[in-house]
Length: 337
Length: 263
Figure (cartoon, each protein chain N blue to C red):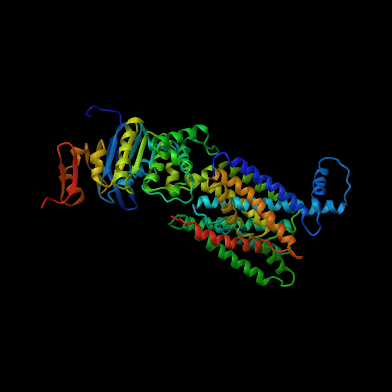
């Protein structure tokens, strides 16, 4: 893309975020007109006459807004995480899940549900085991003689499989009439029960991490040249990679804790973003954040409006993601050292 | 030539080993400003390892390397990359960055962790591209370039580092006859105009004969001869180095190295 066209493009994307956000607040089983939604939102900050049904206020402010904002947060986190990982591993086919964070978080959530814990404890537990899984992956990879990227990804695969088995074990012992559906539903991803407190807790971690990733993003270009070249360009690739993987793991683990496991976003969205703004991380990261937010809101809108019952988000992102991944495989060459 | 001049790169008793396998030993040499220095030797002689020690991607086991009188061990990665820039022998692109994006990466040594290239960095990058005649392709994805063009892009990136020492690992390895001589000519040109010190490994001793100021012959990890091309690149030296009969032919002015003996 031409230089100088990026800012207008980004502005357009953020306008898109606001438009889709507004539309998402209107959509649902209980449709609300856009102007009413705007007035409900404004009335929170400016005293204006409340001419609408209090139910509308509950639907817009208590039910839909936290859910839609959670979608933007999760979408932004997963998409930017994908863009970061693809730069770090110089491979367009990896996502933040390759290090085992999702299966790790799955175990924490499943155990918490088994023990009958509430939402906050389930999220905390999911985050903790997600972080443990990634640390374990890191340790396994470090213990090998070969310190290449492939080792890290293979270690992630091994640790992920281990945690998946444990999750399956939790499902096996779960009460099939009460606990099992909860676990399965969580594993397929959903934003249906997000409350303001959940959202704020997640935002407190995700937003600062995204800010730091955005500030450091140019270094991703350098790191995508491979370790030796990064080093001769004056970078310390190991240290920078630890920082970026750490930040990305935080945002991913918190996202998974908030929404359950939602696959493919980290692959599909950065690919779309790259198609629009090119591979330069200076543009790719902001674009991935904006597009991730839009993508996740739209997926969530479809999930809650397409049928009478909620469709799990992971099912929808999988149906969209798999064909896109096939396209990716056909078009790009993988390059692992 | 015989006047003593301050050396930019000074290597003393350098030794390097991968585990038990000794790659370099007792290597001492110095390279001065505006000098094009060629390292010649057979495969696996340790040529590339030597370059990688100078850019501190590898840490020597023994000996010291001084750049501009500063011990490499005392410098940070950033400091090293401001003093020595390198052009890799091969490069595997992962993403289709534009040529300008690639060249801009050469500015990294001058930018802090949170900084991004600004107008000055773009100006330096454009100057480097201009110098190598690739300004016209600055907006092209660098994945779509020919081998010769890609080499120029990586050169421009190294120039944008504004380092005094330029390290080239077989700069003509992937080039055809014409491009090879164009690139070599550019290297000489740059050394003179920008006052650079160039240290390069070469495959073909003819490149060293034609384009280097001085040559070091490396064999089994040690320096076996050091001097001007005429002094060092003799049929005896080369014959021993490569373990085959080699002849140096001349028309009185130019010299050409050929394998074999006249039949």
